[in-house]
Image 1 (tube, rainbow, N blue to C red):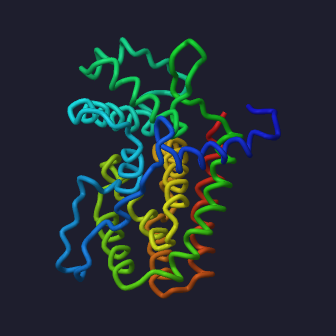
Image 2 (tube, one colour):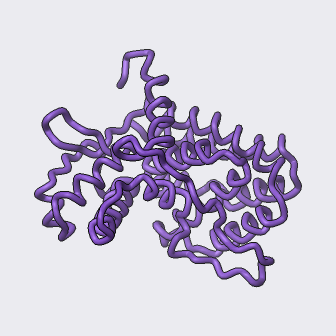
Amino acid sequence: MHKDSSYGYAFIIKFFASAVFGQRGKQTNFRGTRIISSQRCEKYRYNLISADYFGLVASMNSLPDTAQGNQSSTQRTYLTLRNEIITGRLEPGKRLKVEALKESYGTGASPIREALSLLTSDQLVERLDQRGFRVAETSRQQFQEILNLRCTLEDMALRQSVANGGREWEDQLVLVHHYMGKTDRSETELFEERHKSFHMTLLSACESPILLRLCSQLYDLNVRYRFLAGRSKSYGSRNVEDEHQAILDAAVAREVEESSRLLMEHYRSTGAFLAEQID
């Protein structure tokens, strides 16, 4: 638990800094807010390998300039570690020793350290003074802060996106919702990729790359907690599919206030449940 009242300000400042600047002080570019082509829905070929487009592209754009081979090793290590942290396979507080990770992932020390530094910027890993790294801790206070920040920033992005979104944005939104809906929730990681694509596509017409990057990072932090609910029978009693459909319908109809209301209720409902699961 953080007792310092300034923690909330420091938390969002860290997010802003990591969104604008990559490693070694280089400015981070945000590319590729499109998920699919500009043709109509029936002609699209949706590349599900990169369904987690916003989180992956934005994060990898901050990779330092290195040889392609080393960058590929860093990318693979980063994505593997990130996935294991978000899905809870690497538990909060677990020490991340470079030597042990080298053996587990079959790569060198340099890609491991670079990946851990990227994950530190993502707030998924904590650097310990002179003692290496560990998986970021979780707490009820942190979860509530993440939820509040997410609602504030996504509401801002959603309102702009629904107001600005054109025909292509609408097509993208309908398509990613379709792929999310046809994915079995038992395929946890695939569903999560498509679920994030839906939520980020909702925001993608806001015309603010920094805001999108912050929303993407907050999404990932929130997902660590939501995986707890995914294993709960009582959470499964919610009709989340209907909630997504209602959000989609309001967004496509360009109903800004209704879209905002439904999305915030969607997040708050999950948040109320998750808060009870956190020690």
